[in-house]
Structures are given as structure tokens and as C-alpha cells.
Image (cartoon, rainbow, N blue to C red; front, side, top):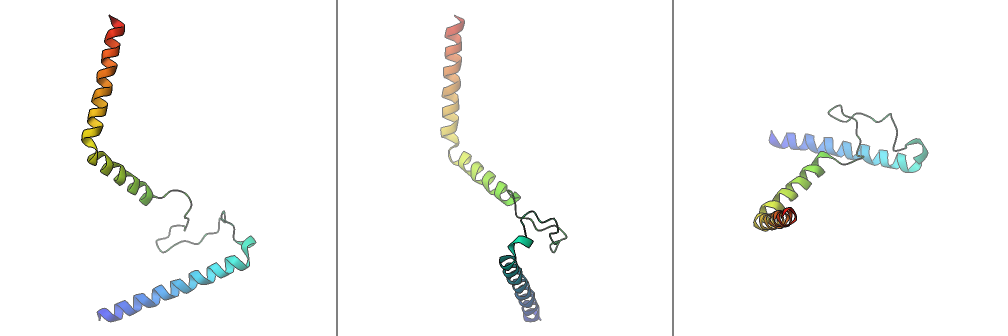
Length: 98
């Protein structure tokens, strides 16, 4: 039973792969008919338009994860730099006021 599901999924993937290959060949043979700004894009499996332009949510999440990891790794160093900077600012401000 499990094997049947796997084989069905494999057939679906193979059909999708063939569709992609046909689309690529069509775009290569007739590039003028298929511009990037084509408003007649077909809906994907979830009903969304297939559009890979711009930055995606996954890229933003990955960047945030990396930044948070860097902050956690260098927390002590960042804290000391900020503390020293504010100490110098307050010391310079006090010397100006006096």
C-alpha cells in the first residue's frame, strides 16, 4: 500500500518534470512570446501565481536567523563595545557641560 503511494507520487513528479521541460523548450524556441512580465502566468498548485521575482520570505528568515545567531555568539563583545561607547559619550558630555 505504501509502495503504491510512492509510485503514484513518482508518476506525478515525472509528469511535472516533463511539463517543466516542455515549458523550457517552448521558452527557448519562442522567447519573444514569453516575457518575464507576462501577466498571463498560470496558477500554481495552491492557486497562487508562480512568480520568483524579488526576495522571498525564506531568504528573509534565513538572514534573521544568521543575525540572531551572530548576536548570541558575540553577545559579550557587543555588550562591552556598547558600554564603552556610552561611557565615552557620557564622559565627553560631562566635560563639555563643566
